[in-house]
Amino acid sequence: MSTTKILNEDWSEYDDRKKRGGSDRNDFACSESWERDYLITKIQKHYPHFTREQIKTAIVQCCESTRAPRPRNKFIECVISRLS
Image 1 (tube, rainbow, N blue to C red):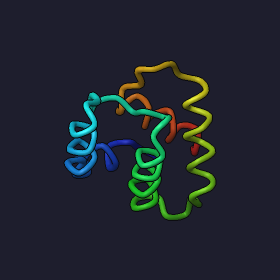
Image 2 (tube, rainbow, N blue to C red):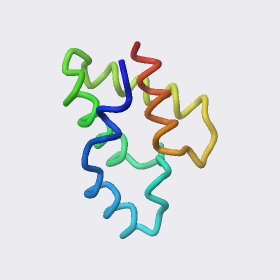
Image 3 (cartoon, rainbow, N blue to C red):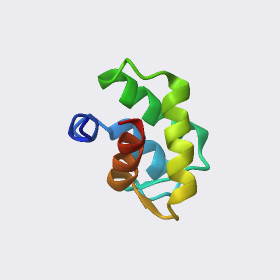
Image 4 (spheres, helix red, strand yellow):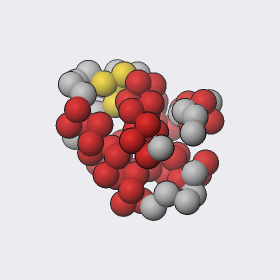
């Protein structure tokens, strides 16, 4: 599995919401449920065979294993590798 499909998606809605909240759009915030949900939706779009729960578990594992700030691209790589 590759992160390319997910990272090449349009992230403008995510970026705008991060900007409005005063956060760096390049970092993934594990504490924000909307960010977790957004990433789950992006992953399921390209990898529909994974359930929301499987993706959520991978996200939680990556949140626990990486320290903030979590660069979005590196965080997504972590999640995808956990799912693989």
